[in-house]
Structures are given as C-alpha cells and as structure tokens.
Amino acid sequence: MMTRRLALLCALSLAVACQTENQPKTSEHADVEPVTQETSEASVEPKPVEPGEATDPMEALKLVVDTPEPKPIAQTEDTKEEKDIPKLKAQASQVGGLGLIGSGRGGGGVGYGHGVGSLGSRGTGARIGGRSLGDRISRSNNPDFVDYGTNPVVRAEVDRFATFAADVDNASYTMARRALNEGRMPHPSLVRVEEFVNAFPYNYGVAKDGPFAVHTEAAPSPFSTDPNTRILRVGVQARELEKKERGPVHLTFLVDVSGSMSRPDKLPLAQRALNHLLDNMRPEDSVAVVTYASSTKVVLPKTSLAQKERIKDAVDSLSAGGSTAMGEGLELAYREAAKNLQPGHVSRIIVLSDGDANVGSSSHDEILKRIRGYVQEGVTLSTVGFGMRSFKDPMMEQLANKGDGNYAYIDSFEEAKRFFGSELDGTLHVIAKDVKFQVEFHPEHVETYRIIGYENREVADKDFRNDAVDAGEVGPGHRVTALFEVKLKHREPAQFATVRIRHIEPGQTSAIESRYPLHLHRVRTTLGHASHELQFAVAVAGFAEILRKSPYAKDLSYDLVLEVAESSAGSSAKRRELVDLIKAAKRLDSQG
Image (cartoon, rainbow, N blue to C red):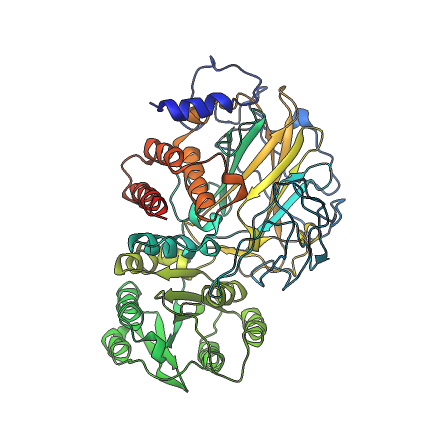
C-alpha cells in the first residue's frame, strides 16, 4: 500500500485517460490488454513506417506496456520532412547561463551561449553543432567531471522531435554509489540520469523477432503537480546471443601502470578484474597485454586462452610507476589489436585506467580523433575506470563513445564480477550499432515535453537518418530505458507520440528503422497503479534528479523517492541497494 504522502502526490497528479479508474486490471504492467494479433479496436498490429507515410491516429497502436515488435524495414534515404529546427525551448525557472557541451557521442563540441530573457525564463543562446546553447540549466562544474546541464522543457509546436543515441553505460551510478558508501555526497556533475536508470534490470521480456523488444508505459509524473503531466517510459530489451553466434574474441588489455594507479582500488583491483575476465573466456579466444606509463610496452603478445596461466602471470606481474602517456599506449594497443582482425571475430581493446592522461605527444582531442579510424577498420574499444582520487570521468567516457564500446566504473570486486562475468557477452559483443531514438510528440495533443537525462547523447534531429553520424551500440541482453515528462492538451484518446528506432546490424551498412505509434488508452490514473518496472525507473530517475540538483526536482524529496523505491523494489538485491543509497543520501544531505 502507498503511504499517505505518496497517495497525496498521486491524487495531485491524476492522469489523462479516456477510461476511469474503475477499469479492471489485466496485467501488472498496464491497465490494458497486451496487444495480440487479433483484430480489435484496442489491438492493432503496428506497421513499419514507409517513406513519406502520413501518421493515421485511427490505425496506430494503443499505448501499452508490451508493444509488439513491428517488422523493421530498411530505409537509407532521408524521407522524413524534418528540419533541424532551432530548439527555441519553453520557459524554465532559471536564467540562461554558460553552456559547456562535451564531445561525447552525438555531441557538438564545446560551445557557449547566454540567456537573453528576463529573470524567470531562459533565452535560447547560440546554436553550434546541432545544439541550442544556453537552453540547458547548468550547475557548477568540477574539473574531473563535465556538467552537461539539464534538458529543459520544450514546446512541441516549436520542436516536436527528441532525438538521441542509445546509452547502456552505468559508470555514473557506480561512482555515485561508491561516494555514498564512503560517506560522501556525489558531485552533481557526476550524475547522469540515464546511467542511473540503465544500471538496473527491468522485466521487459525477450525479443521475438529482430534485435529488440520495445515496451512503453505512461503514468502521472511525480516531477509535477500538473494533472496533465505524464511520465512516458520507452524500454528496449536486446536479445541474448546464442552460443553458435559467439565467434572467437581477441582482446588487447591496455593497462595504465602510471604512478597514479598504485592505490589498492586501482591497479591491484584491475588485476583481480582481469583475472576474473580470463576465467570467463574460452580456449579459442586470445589476449594481448599492453601497458603505458612514461613509456609503452607489449608485455604479452597475442596468446591463446589455452595458455591462460601464462596470461595471468603477465597480468600479475604489472606494477605502477611513472607518468601517463595514454596516447602512445593507445597507438601501440591498436597496432596489436589490428593483427587479430578476422571476419566473424571480435577484436576489442579494453582500457583500464583512472583516465589521468598527463604526458604524451597527443592531446585528448587528438586521441579521440584517431580512434574513429580504427573503429572503421573493425577494432572497438571499451574503458573501465578505477579509483576516485585523480579519476577523470570525461576522458574515459569519451574514449568508449568514440571507440564504439562500453564505459564502466569498477568500485569493487563484486562490480568486476558483474561486468566481466554475468554481463560478459554484452560487454564484448554488439548486436546493433549506431542505435538512435527519435520520439515525435504531436503538437495537436502535446503541449510540452522534456527528456529526463541523455544530455550528452543528443543527436541533431536532421541526423536521425544520417547513418554517418555515430550513435550508441547495444550488446546482447542490454536494456535501454528512456523517460520523458510530457504535458498533454486533451483528455480524450489520441495518438500523442511516435517512437522511431534506427540501427545498423553488425556486418551491414544499411540501417533498419522501426516505428511504434503511441496512444493514450486506459493509461494508469496514478503512479501507484503503474507497473513496478515504471515505478522503480521513476524512483531511480527522481533520486538522480535530486542528487544532480535538477531544477525539476523541486516537487521531489528523499522520502518520496524512497517510498516509491521501497514499494517497487521487491526482493531484488540490486534494487534494494538503491533503497539503501537513498537513505544514505538523505542522512548525508541533512548533515550539510
């Protein structure tokens, strides 16, 4: 049962729905029947989008949790009538200030802009590289983290498209967890909401046809007391990899052995993590070990896992000392990895570092530029961060983004066992490349919307069908969840949005695009009646919004998100972990 506080909030946040709360429940996930192949008013199979096809609300799918996967179609031409409309954003409760835009996936470089309005609203600033600068609310910055700001509320009649790259990383959550467990509040710039949300498992079911299963759900928003404001969840579940699909894997460990890695939570933990990874690889796989400090060295050339003990000896022999020539280390690692390029095989570099690249002939920008060339040749790159002292989060994230790989942060051996054990297939393999989302909010039914998170994953609207633009990679078993806050205009049923997902399958060059129309139909009238999956995702996002001091968290409190988290966590140890972290943050925050 919901407590009185949550019940009061839900009462203030009554949903827009065409059915009353007296409608009977048919599943835990939604107050609607799951769509089947049967023909009925509430059960219509979605159609793949055709070039130039108009959207017909009468033929669209009603909003449900288990949206069936439509048969995807290849689209290689830019057929949608869309423009990169300057994002003249809706009013917000902050003054526009300097906007620092990082160079992460989908990013547009460093830009600057300023608010031009009066107090109480923000101006739009300049627009550089596909972004409106000054339209995000920025926080104070920490030199070890990049402040990407907070996505503002957008008027659908001005810009109806929200376009962004998939993100399966969760390093932000792991770093915040470590800080809280050590009795420290995480710096607001460290908190990336989407990485908090995607750090947890959700029961989205399995993909039956194609790489993804897509699920949608909506409920009243706890971020607002406006009864017309909803939280929309779009969840994607990637299929698992069958054993016969898993080709040989060739890894090149690039290990930072500079002096800053000497602490117990850095190189020693990295060595334990690598040894656990080796225990989960197969005899047909191979590993090379490269190190960098003041100089670079191939400690172990390509060696078969049939000689696993020899590889472990090489890993255990590493010791820290010297400065950090990361650029030269990457060059050497790529040369080693390129030797292992074979059709049907995986060749990936895994960088283990604190991200502190302080010496070398290559600047950070030069390093990032070089990586793209190697990716095109078939060598991907993932990064694994260690330690908190002198840790450089932006460098590690951007390396993985440019390298078409994952970014993880390991704060304990338990986290190492997850990343290099139970989730190893998702760590090493890719089933969908350059995955982009575009949600079109129909202005006749939607007044405003806001993407919750994904600030550094934004893609220009016009580049959704530009397959030369880099986006996110999704591995087997990965889940991607995106949350939107949507203010609706009407109470009657209507198709209020269309979700489009675009991806390229490994070994292919043409993208596949799928469309999922969304209707309001018997949607939950309170957050308490929504599925536990949506409730928990909202609790995670709300907690992250509080931690990063989002201006949209003014109606939230630790007590509220704690109630929602406790009521939806169930017996999951991972979810119960969030409950403990919320309690820790509340205690630390109250101490000033």
